[in-house]
Picture 1 (cartoon, rainbow, N blue to C red):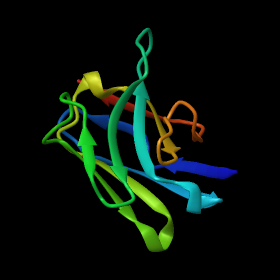
Picture 2: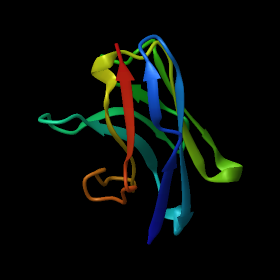
Picture 3: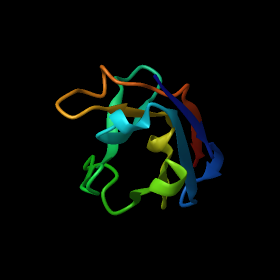
Amino acid sequence: QVQLVESGGGLVQAGGTLRLSCAASGSIFSIYARGWHRQAPGKQRELVASITAGGTTNYADSVKGRFTISRDNAKNTVYLQMNNLKPEDTAVYYCATKTYGGTFEGGYWGQGIQVTVSS
């Protein structure tokens, strides 16, 4: 079992910044990659950014150049630095894990945290 706790969401004006954190505990040795997903009202959930155990990162086109995913292995925490936020970034953000060869859908998920960007 892996427990994930997200923090750092909130309300920000367009052009502002937020940093999300996701702390993991439990059987963290099983984690190969960690990712941030988001789901806006009426839309499908999408992968925003991911990072593997080796540090390889991947970003959705909509956030490239604005968002940065990073990890602190000593704290078992992954961060999502979000700069130049836009109203369309408004969503519930979830962190998730996957094992090697697995999928995020089949992994562990946090409870989600709201990010609201006002225009």
